[in-house]
Length: 93
Figure 1 (tube, one colour):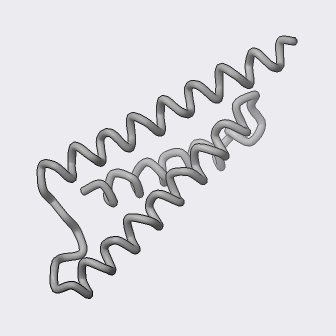
Figure 2: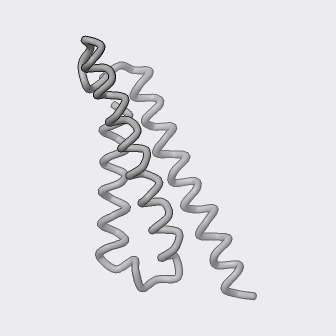
């Protein structure tokens, strides 16, 4: 489930960046967060492949994995907020 949530977050941030976020003051924060989510999705995909090679399913749909996915999304959004604030403070000075 964390792979699914991470890919959805990566798609959402990518769309925001591509559909107008390039020209905003938060463009660097959007780009950084987008790349971070895509990197996490790649990592979870490799983990899923390792699970398949071990005889398990590709997607883990457990409660624990859902909680991990929610934590990943929350941490990514918090990172985006922190980077946005830092870029705005830097732009003011």
